[in-house]
Length: 176
Figure 1: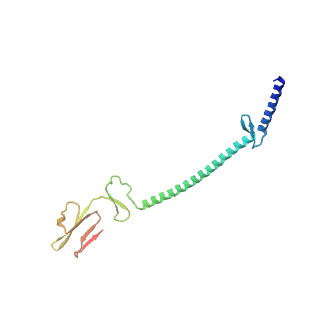
Figure 2: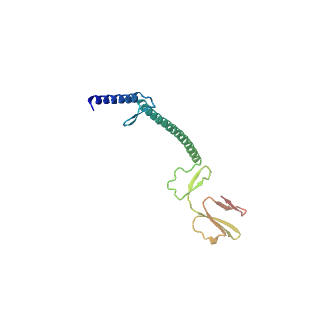
Figure 3: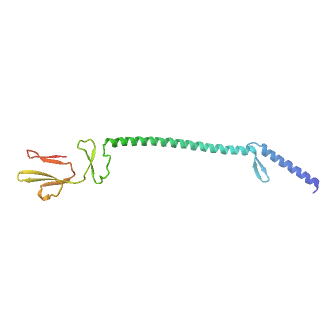
């Protein structure tokens, strides 16, 4: 090789590379330029691909934002329904007139007040109720304590609140 041919080869390579570089810089948004090192995108194609990627990401974000907005809306609906149900439950509980302090009341019962305007805590003890014939007279016994069941023709044990007596005609009157 001579200096002349080396120079001509160098100029030819520069011209070829210059044309490749020109296509890379000025190619459209579809252009990929084949080079010795592999395909190279034109500047316009590289920019378009980046923009497309950004737009796709924004679209995904938009979808995610819509999904989040729907989830927030649904959550707010559930919250409102829960608040309404809680308020209704509280009103119902308040209408029952339940005792407000039940500390120390373990093992006791809740009973309707005599005036039927609420509830009260009562002892959960049994009360003896017995009937026996004393000659021609019927006797009603009630209370707590020790009783011999054999002394009564009829007897039962239940919670407080049952009341019975014998009227002047000798009839048994039971109030529950």
